[in-house]
Every structure is written in C-alpha cells, then in structure tokens.
Length: 262
Ligand code: NAD
Image (cartoon, rainbow, N blue to C red):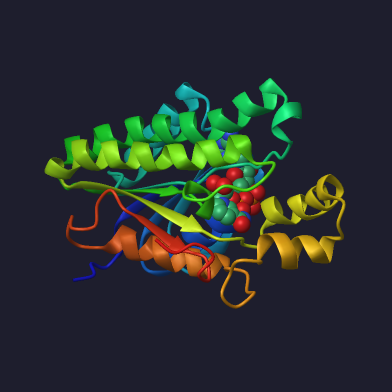
C-alpha cells in the first residue's frame, strides 16, 4: 500500500538545484512539508518560493552537510518548525574527475566528505528524531549507477557511491526494528549542472568531442540512448518516501534506462 505524503515532513539536502530540487518540489506537490537544505540560503529560498506559490509549505536552512553543527542545527530547525522529520533525502553531492595518478588528495577528501560524511551526519541527526517520534522514518540516499559500476576518472565518486550502499544496509538493520527504512536511489546520467560541467571536462581528458562524451561515454550502455530525468528520480524518491510498510529496506533502485541491470 502506498501511503500519502500528505502532512509528512521531508528534508532534502542539496535541494537548491538539479535532482534535489525536483525531489523537493515533487514531494511538496504530493502534500509534504519541505525543508530545503543547501549551501546558499538565497538559492534555497527560490525553491521555497516555488513551493509556496504552488500552495505548499517549506522553509530553507543553511546547511553544509560536512559541517556537524550546521547539520544538527538544520535538522533541529526542521523539527522545531514542523514538529518532526519523517523523510530524509541525503542528496547533496559533487563530481570531480581526474585520472587516478593525478587525483589531488584534497579533491579526493573533499568529495568523500560531502557524499559520505554528509550522509552520515544527516542520518545521525535525523534518525534520533525519528526514533524519538516513534513513527519510524524513511531515509533515502542519492546513489548512482556508480554505486554498482565504475567509470574512468571517477575514483572518488565511485568509491563514495559504493560506500552509500554499505551505510544504507547498516541503517536498514539498525533502524528497521524501529520503523526506519534506508534505501539508495541510483540514477543514470541526468542533465543537471553537475553533469553539464563534466561534458567539456571529459572531452578534454579523453580527447574526444562533447557529442562523443554524451553518445559514447555517458549514454553508451543505456538500452535506448536516453538521459534519465530529474522527474524520473523524483518519482522514485517519492515512492520510497511514501511507501507505507517497512518491507523495502536496505535496497538500491537503479533508474538508468537499463545502463546497469542488477
Ligand atoms: P547539482 O549540482 O545540480 O546539485 C547539487 C546540489 O548540492 C547543489 O545545489 C549544491 O549546492 C549542493 N551541495 C554541494 N555541496 C554541498 C554541501 N557540502 N552541503 C550542502 N549542499 C551541497 O547536482 P545533481 O546532479 O542534482 O546531483 C544531486 C545528487 O545526485 C548528487 O549526489 C549526485 O552525485 C547524484 N547523481 C547525479 C547524477 C546526474 O547525472 N546528475 C547521476 C547519479 C547521481
């Protein structure tokens, strides 16, 4: 049975742009109260305004997911404002591409920190409130096909996205008895600012044209040569966020036009 998201409280990190923004707008359209957590309050407030214009409820919080104090404050503000946190979408992420032999250690640490420290810190802060509220919760990590598959130049990203599967499985085991589920949504390539930036970078690194990056690298293994869309991912996240029972737990759902098949 699919539970309505109506009245549920959802916090999405990295919600000022791309996939996170679409997830927030979609859950708000389905009746959830939204907390837009991102680095820039100005950008987050644009999403809040969109939600309010459509008749929904939302606030913005200033949150660098690698900053423990900001994460705790943002999640506390969510609970103080809306009385609970029912859904956490840990989505904030970046991409940095280098061949392994040139990968700056500082870039490696920065990427792992945003994806993994961010997922850990937001989970830890949110799950305490989910346990205390006694109504369970839904934690959704934004993984990637790169949670299951590797690509050249993406040592840090592939490592981080694989790591999220491990975290989700532990949280599923710990949280399950208390009604908290943890799952990973794994998109293929989606044309967001994160991906637009990679096209010229990969063209330069691989000495091919931008069109060739799209056709021969990004979409090469899809069954139909199509990009996944932000709407595809937002619907998958809303499905997991609104799923009534705790039967789906510790799983990853790949949404990639058949690029990777489990
Ligand atoms: P995006 O660049 O459009 O949005 C990412 C958002 O995260 C931005 O608003 C940015 O400000 C925010 N962010 C970055 N660092 C942050 C930090 N330290 N604290 C808080 N917020 C921070 O990117 P996107 O494509 O929407 O990516 C969202 C997620 O989806 C990422 O985890 C990414 O790895 C994942 N993903 C994207 C694709 C794709 O093809 N676009 C595919 C698979 C997975």
